[in-house]
Image (cartoon, rainbow, N blue to C red; front, side, top):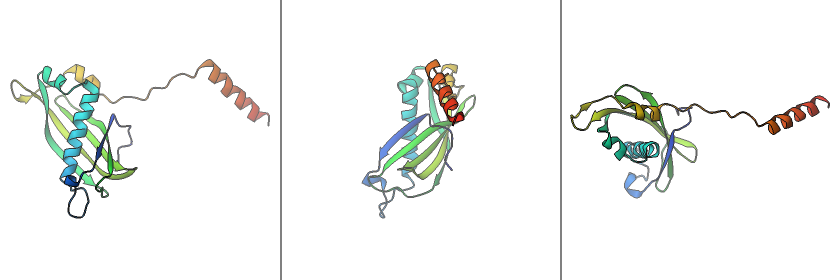
Length: 162
């Protein structure tokens, strides 16, 4: 089932012939590739470049993955992959993926990544600056302008006087 929270990033990919099996349906082995590309593009949107991680001496290594196939996608379909942070641990980051074609869910899954220190090649805490970027964003509500509030009050008064 798709995660109801808003996606942190949306990645789109056009299905190519190489992505399909003999029946013209996206092969199950392609979704991990699509999800990995979506993860990299999400990091690019948050950090400006994946190289920002490398500059800080860390990299993300995939430790676990899970995919559930819901409906077939076919050659030339445009996959829309919503990406969100599911969990954020001290050294781990789990990203969720919901893929659809024209609003029809085709696959859902998640990848758990471990933050690795590149010089020492072992798990290392995710730096605080990056942790802040991965925190789920809360919807912001803007106070209504005084003009909008007056307009809404007049509309309520009119409907009450009818």
